[in-house]
Amino acid sequence: MMRLGFALALLASPASAQVTFIDMSQALGPHSYDGGWEHFVGGGVVVMDCNGDARPDIFAAGGANPAALWINRGDFQFARVPLPALTDTVGAYPLDIDGDGILDLYVMRVGPDVALKGTGDCSFTDATADWGIAQTDQWTTAFTAWWEDGSRPVMALGHYVDRSNPDGPFFACDSNTVLRPGVNGYTAELLAPGFCPLSMLAATDARGRMTLRLSNDRQYYVRGGYEQMWDIQDRRFLGDDDGWAQVSLWGMGIASADLTGDGLDEVMLTSMGDQLLQIAQSDGTYAPAPYGIGTYAQRPYLGDDGRPSTGWHAEFADVDNDGRQDLFIAKGNVDQMPSNAMADPNNLLMQQPDGTFSEAAATAGLADTRRARGAALADFDGDGRLDLVVLNRRADIALYRNDTPKTGHWLALDLSQPDGNTRAIGARVTLTTAQGTQTKELRIGGGHAGGQALPLHFGLGQATQADVAITWPDGTTTTQTLPAGATTKITRP
Image (cartoon, rainbow, N blue to C red; front, side):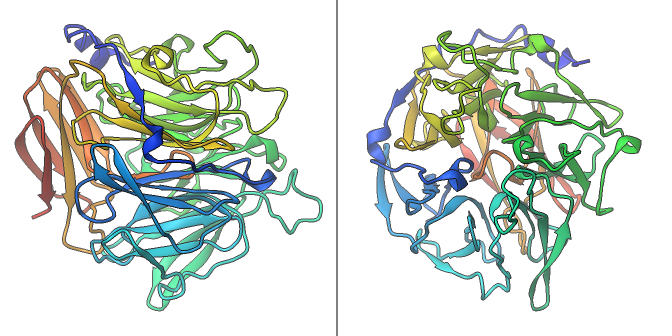
């Protein structure tokens, strides 16, 4: 049963402003995620600051088209810049692989992946061989990473269909891989069975343990396939004895956030059909959210197509800065699948004071029915309101400016620490105001085929300051009170 204590405490908060987004896509120009059946899935977007100017830049996969990179020049002006020639890209994730304090990119491909070393000026060089990352001809569709010591990350790769299987593609899911750092580069470890993951996320679970969650595409399941949870410390899959009930769906993307204020993250799984929100329980298990919460979003809300929706990227964020996490879901038919909706608009689900969610995409200007894939919410113009970028299949990329009037206050935290895990991945932030408590964890992974490396953004509602406690990856905790309206850089002592 969902705990609504935190939500009920917000009943006295001011009513949300009418959320409004303005289409600014001309700032990026034409770019689409294209290609044949191997690019029905994927289409990830990366948002990161690749030149240190505190403005979020954008990388977008291209599928059969070349991948693209735009530098943010400010005031919604973007300049497209060259990349190493990269085609057959599925998506990418930003992280500091070599510990030099500069963001790199792990690029997932149909075929050998590429690890790009950032130089600090938004240019990149291929460092795959230099870093000892052995590559195969597999089809990578999911990625996540975490640190087990202070040096280099452990990286998990999710592989889709085994293209060499003569009986494929149906029932031909490939195995997955965990790359572990060693003295002479990375060692590949088999992670099996594989059920065609389209998203992976390493994060603290409801038990309080670091766990690798895999969301798998049921369309290509081997017999008996299901969603998976892999305990990172024990290096084993969880089962019934751990309270992990098997769930089977057409898994596309993962998003997680603490929606109830208890310090445990709820988990959203997108799918072809229902979008499943799992509520973290105090006993370390998960329970499906009640249908009335408003997050299942199983059919298009425009009313002109009654077939099931297809959800891809999902992301929790506070769009109107009222102190409550909202939810964006990118929607779009796989290609021409007649069993599912063709005109399938994206969702913007605004969390209400009672903890339920209400659809706002149509009135907000986001009811786009192109085939969306990856997306990201980020403050591109530095005004404290989260904007939106959406990558589409066989249609141009979309960019929207958040013009919502009279939003609440906000603050953002840019964390770092003096070791190989320079961006403090795994740190957990607890922020408290008179309105309540919010918690967020820094991680790499989730979404659909792309992620962010940006300061953690918090909406504060009417509060003009907040008490912030940071539990760093080494277990130490620091506390301070911070003002609203600014991004604060904090380095672990």
